Length: 456
Image (cartoon, rainbow, N blue to C red; front, side, top):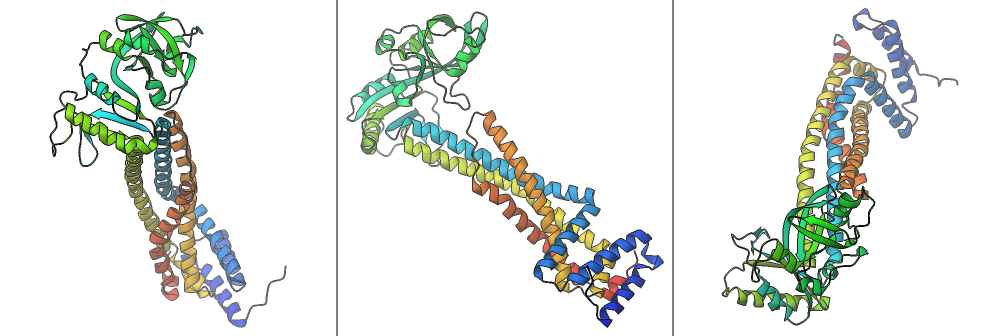
C-alpha cells in the first residue's frame, strides 16, 4: 500500500522527530526507539482520515500502553473489579431476597391477616413484651367476627427429632386444622391432621420437606405411618409437605395446637405466639382488620389513645414492609460498595497522573509531529475508560456469579435484571470520566518544547 505524500513541513517534522528519538540521552534501545517512532508516525499519517480512524488509533494506543504496564494496569483495574462486583452481587442478592419473600407473602393470599404480640413502634419495629399478650381467648373472640372464615393460633417450640438412629433438631409448630389452607401448604404424601386430631390432642405430626429428608432420606422408608420421637413423646407421621424452598421454611414439623400445648407445656388460657386468620373476600380485609383491633382492645382492656400490645398486619401491608426493608438493605450494600468504587477511581487518577509524568517526552514528540491537544487528551481519557470498562466487565461476571451462588445457597430464586447488567458499565464509564479527565487535561496542556527537553 503506497503512503500518501507528505508536505515539506511534515517531512521536516518527521526528520526532527527521528533525530530526537536517536539522541543518546533518551535512554532507549534502538529497537525501542524504532517501535515508538513507528507508532507515532503511523498516528501522524492517519490523523486526517476521519474521526473514526482517530478514535480507533486512540483505542489501539490505549491497549498498547496498558499492555506495556500489565502489572500496574491489573492492580489499578482490581479496585474497579472489586467495587463493581460488590455492587452487582448486592443488587442480585437483594433482588432475590425481595422476590423470595414476595412469593411467600403472595402465597398467603390477599385476604390473610396476621396478628403478633408486642406493640408496633412508629418505625414499624415490633417491641416484644415481657409476657405474651395474645391468648386462646383472643382466638375464640376472633372466630366470632363477621367475614372471618378460618382462624389458627400458633405456638412455636424447638425439639430434637429421632428415628432409628437418625436425629434432627427443628421447630415444632402447634397450629389448627385450618392453618394449611391459610398458609397455602400443599401435601406431598399422606394428609394434614384433622379437627378431631386437634380437639383430642392426638400424637400426630406433619413433616416439612427438610425434616423428612434428613430423618427418612437415607433409609428410603416412606415416612407415612412411621413413629418418631419428638422430645419425650412418640408421634405418628400422617403427612409430608411439598417443599416451598428457601431458608428454613421447610425445616419444620406441624402438630395439632392442643397437642403442643399439652405435651410441651401450656394451659387452656396460655399465651400464643401468633394468630393467623382468613377473610372471606379481599374487599372485606380492611373492615375485618378494624373489627379485630376493636375486639382485641376490648379483651386486653386497652383504653382509647393507649398503644396496643399487639401488632396486626395484612398480607399487602407485610409485602410493602418487606419491599421497603429490602430496598433499604440494597441502598446500604450499594453504598458500601460505592466506597470501594471511589477508592478504585482515585487509583485510576493516581496511575494516570504517574503515566503522564513518565510519558512526558512521548507527549512532546506526538505534539511536535502534529498531534493536537484534544488528541492527547482523548488518548489518556480513552486509556482510563478502557481500564475501567475492563474492570467493570470482569466485575459484572464476578458479581453475577457471587450473587447467584449466594441466592442459590439460601434456596432463593436468582433474579438478574437489565439494571444489574447496565449499571456496571454506566458506573465504570462515569468513574473513568470523573477521575480520568484531570490527568488527560494535564497531559494535553504540556508545552511540547518543555516536554521534549525533559530528561528521561
